[in-house]
Length: 125
Image (cartoon, rainbow, N blue to C red; front, side):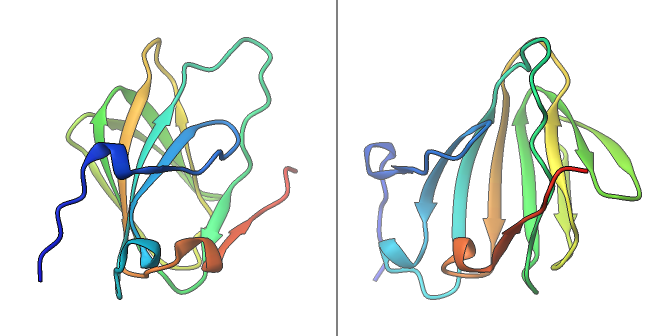
């Protein structure tokens, strides 16, 4: 049976450096997917950037809702804008950074019901 999940049911994840809300996951009854809404604020002067992370053997699909940012891996930096989609292979270290003067808003989809269980935060260099 289909389920309707309203915004007031989203769970704030209290993750550092961004506002991240889990919309769909095993906690909402999903067997195969996680969906998150993410807001990355305008960086404050002198603020330390978030470290890269990866998802073990799980792809991520990032849809840029609004704002401008940079999607980074150890090998590349891609400018991203509203309407862009980034497909991140499993096990690829990455981070998305805000490079504008407005909040960067993303929708992130993972074909896994508990993405936290397979996410690895990497150390800053």
